[in-house]
Image 1: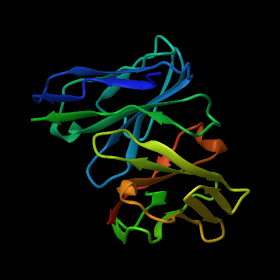
Image 2 (image 1 turned 120 degrees about the vertical axis):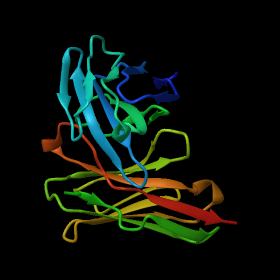
Image 3 (image 1 turned 45 degrees about the vertical axis):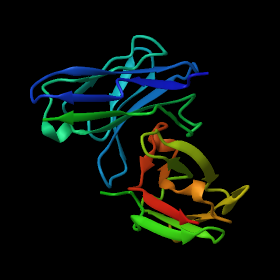
Image 4 (image 1 turned 180 degrees about the vertical axis):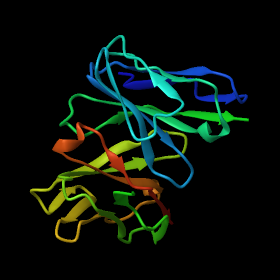
Length: 113
Length: 113
């Protein structure tokens, strides 16, 4: 059982480039989340989805976009990368809004230079 | 506005002794609290949780205490083991959060042999 998988593990981008962080879960969870973690900080919610075709902004959505065409996949798109987007990105999923317990992927470490 | 705060960035404890990690919150609408453990280069993993209808929840060596009047919770690890060395995140949620978790900044626990 793979759980939540993320690709790539590491990536270096130049300022102004774009990329997509991939996230897939095999637990048939309806809820999926994208977080970023900056050094010494907690996890900040970027976007979340309550099911295929439904997404909403979290606390820090600027500079990012998401889509949710299937239950399994929740890609995060970075347009026009900026140094402020250097961070570790985590994808997570949960079965319902009220299960609270979220399952996390291993993370993608992104550096923008 | 930091709704969930972990004021100690780090804690060092001797193997076999008790580790106490603290967390404060400001939003009185939070009614569910979780602790996550994170090893380097991995995603956070769920450790233990507590509902606001309880003031204590125990799971093996891990116990979480909730003081609603003080808006404070703590995680006790007894006895501490070197394998417990990790970053611990406190998180909170509630019925009005739509499944979203609000995370503290994390406390890095080091258990020395």
